Image (cartoon, rainbow, N blue to C red; front, top):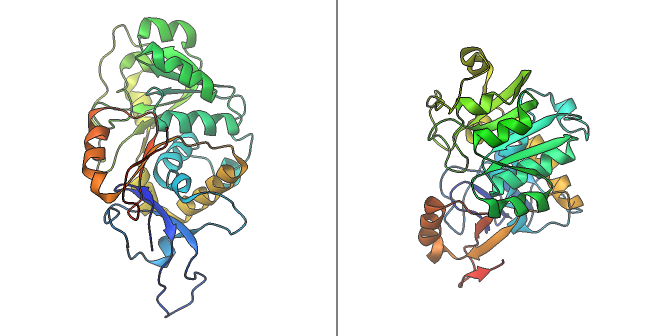
Length: 299
């Protein structure tokens, strides 16, 4: 199948060939997506049919935008709805009245958290950012920007947050590492989701100390914290992951999700793009389309 996708982790593409043995609901030309950990920087890849999610023919969405779903939006959705059953997580009021805080700025993942949080009924989605120039982007998406200076964000959110999402020290380059100060925003029964990137260890590094005293018992909070890695979740419960993706396809079709694609690049530009991704956070997504010959800037 030809695969426009996010390099290295996710893809959306059309089936080129189907193995004829066994039951098969997929046909040549079907638009499908999946989450993969290897082989994505190629024009064709062979994947078992039970790992694919078929995009319904009545869903008018583009392959590049679909390619943003399996890692970025799936990870954000599962972080927001950790612990919720499949019956509850797809309802518009799944997070009704909840206050969410994401420590990570106006990144592509931050945008996904805001869009999905609002769609699920969250009353407020706070996003901390290090630079004031990111604030307007957060506001445009629908979030409430806060400085990542504890003296400022604690003044607005102390013991008000139901769901705190961020990373432990050095476990995810797309977010700011959480400190003890962040845990002061939690309600007594608030929850914490610690993000980890591909290959992150089961025991994420320790939380950094903060600038001031911590109002909560960190040992109890961390004991209840959910460690979230979208790749591990996909392998451990693929059926739920596929249902989540089907739900996200519907939201993309309705225009609820609006992934920002910065560039579409050919295979020859993948190495340079990965260097840029490593060097700085991108406020959007770079899509590798192996069949194009020249870089196509989108925004």
